[in-house]
Image (cartoon, rainbow, N blue to C red; front, side, top):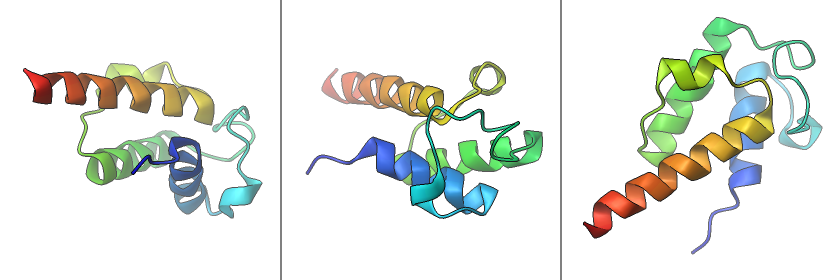
Length: 87
């Protein structure tokens, strides 16, 4: 079953930023447009780690500004996880 990563990322951002998922634009700046601060960014990372069983490093978080970048980071982490599983 294929997971809709875009929707899942929107749900996570919405939960932390207190929006409805359909209100979250992945191209919006999560800090200036969605009101996420550094603590909320860590909450987003923790939720992603728990839901997808991947690791998000602090230095990855520091360079992320949009929901789309979060989705791309998650895609890379899931590919890495899958690759590890195959080895």
